[in-house]
View 1 (tube, rainbow, N blue to C red):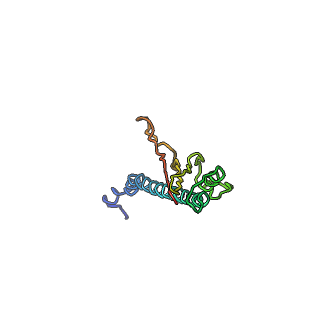
View 2: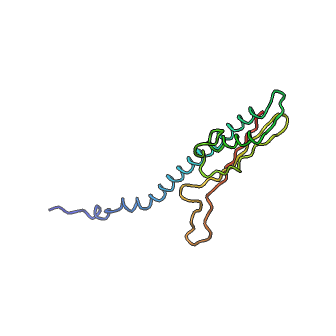
View 3: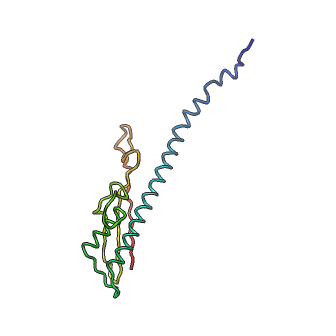
Length: 151
């Protein structure tokens, strides 16, 4: 005759209850880690694109006497380089949803040129975190910005 002891019978399903308690915390940590990695990746892409644009603009707009001349063609090529990775502006954008008007090319004087850009980051799960009727949703989007000055 096989019988369960009262201690073993009282422990049935405890692992399921423990998992139900721990799973939301584990999933939250997993998604938060993925979002942080995604933010860092997109910020790195923005900084590299702005740096490349500043390098191109400094070489194209400066002559040997350190006089900066920013032409419309050079400005357009620089914006294209920041947006798509090439001066012709062909191909897809480096950062999805980035506005070309957010790229600023300017002459800082004394032979220095600056390129700055901003990008609104949208999380994977949506721009707002619902509060389930306890107020307005929490805005999760953030503005990433980068600026580089070169001679």
